[in-house]
Length: 72
Image 1 (tube, helix red, strand yellow):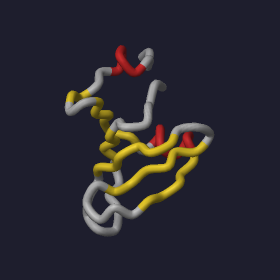
Image 2 (cartoon, one colour):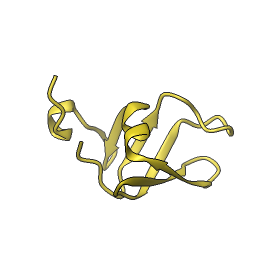
Image 3 (spheres, one colour):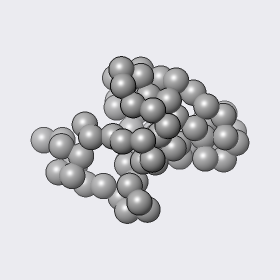
């Protein structure tokens, strides 16, 4: 899956503040993401992040599965 720093992730489960949109700060074995509402930063494993992902936004545009490199 092609996730890059600067992308925004829409997750299935919201942050305790109520927001489910996170900005990607760092990518590797773990993702470092920041809540777009309260600006808290969280490190989560790549596998957990990819599993709980609903949508990816790059430059304000929702990315499709083909653009992210996901094959059904």
